[in-house]
Amino acid sequence: MSLATSEHTTKAFDFDLRELKCMVAEMGGHVEKQLLTAIDALIRNDKERGEKVVQADATLDALQHTIEEKGIATIAMRQPMAVDLREVVGVLRIANDLERIGDLAKNIAKRVSALGSEDMPRQARRGMTHIMSLAIGLLTDALDSFASGDGEKAAAVWTRDNEIDLMYTSLFRELLTYMMEDPGTVAAGVHLVFCAKNIERVGDHATNIAESVYYIVEGRTLSEERPKADSTSLMRVMPSSAPSSAH
Amino acid sequence: MSLATSEHTTKAFDFDLRELKCMVAEMGGHVEKQLLTAIDALIRNDKERGEKVVQADATLDALQHTIEEKGIATIAMRQPMAVDLREVVGVLRIANDLERIGDLAKNIAKRVSALGSEDMPRQARRGMTHIMSLAIGLLTDALDSFASGDGEKAAAVWTRDNEIDLMYTSLFRELLTYMMEDPGTVAAGVHLVFCAKNIERVGDHATNIAESVYYIVEGRTLSEERPKADSTSLMRVMPSSAPSSAH
Image: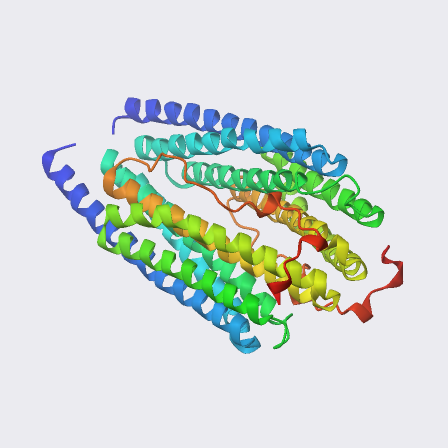
């Protein structure tokens, strides 16, 4: 390849990469909005807002598809090596995680229609609001670290998911207690446990995004195994162990 | 590029693609085994087998990572166009779905340790066994269509996920009824609902794999919107509506 061609290819690559990053940032904004709206719909039991989130998810799927196609075409046409290739791969991974957060927001929004306005117990509402704000905070910080190319910030996000896992474990226990004490709340409780699990998963994907940002910026992975504190899948809660303060 | 170089690149590409396909087929075998073992552990309440599935999941993650890296390197080095590029992209998508099925198997396996041997009601056991065999059948057929490059078979898989969704909806209702009638079963019931949901998701990913196979073989997407029959997120089940035959 002549020097002139190589320079042209590099410029074309830089242009493509910039465009890809813009698309992912745009997608991040959409996903954040979807998640906020889904959560708001759940807390306020606003079925109409929930329905809007469900409808809008197709846009995110299409956006992720476009980003994937553009990323692959960039790799095929510009043949980036090493650092450049790493950036494209990182960007594609972020788009993939964003799409999955979008799905989780849609799943939460779908359940709004199954819940009545009185279905969320006061105590659970507090826990739910708390875990939601943790998850949104994590997503926002992960997206900020991407926008500013800040590896340190990305690493900080990465260590924070543990908090969400602990909060989920406590919320899971609370909702189970509530269901055991009043069987009439079982259906609502199951939907709320699914919503809580979806929010906990948002934390996982925000953490993945932070990992990808770190990989793009620093060129290595946050290899140390992330501490995982969601132990609810191991949890047996017997009626007798239900703390009386759970209402 | 000279004719000789171009021919060399084509051969090298064919070699890479064949290797990629072998790796994905191998990964498919692992995932099938993981899913079967997880399900068997759940049905027999075999905690040791469950633990083995949890441990083995890391191998799948590593395999998916290797496939992704190899696929991207192939695209960057061989610059495949059109049909060839489509094949690599399709293969990468399949590996991604396989990794997610692996995660679902792990999630099911994790919950085995939270369940006692008497925790699955007889009626639910029948439903659970049924939905599992549907999901495994779908995955096996999707993987077969990949191995044989059979677009027609892939399209047939694609239409069958509806059955699993319907089965899940009925199982969800059954488990809820069971929990409402006996609050002592709430904790086990919630874990079982999560397992059922995971199995329903296996169906979704098997369907995605079939879509990717179709895309690889036929060069177009199964664009018609797949009918979706899991309506449990919209479902309100009140204690009074519980059918008495649910035990």
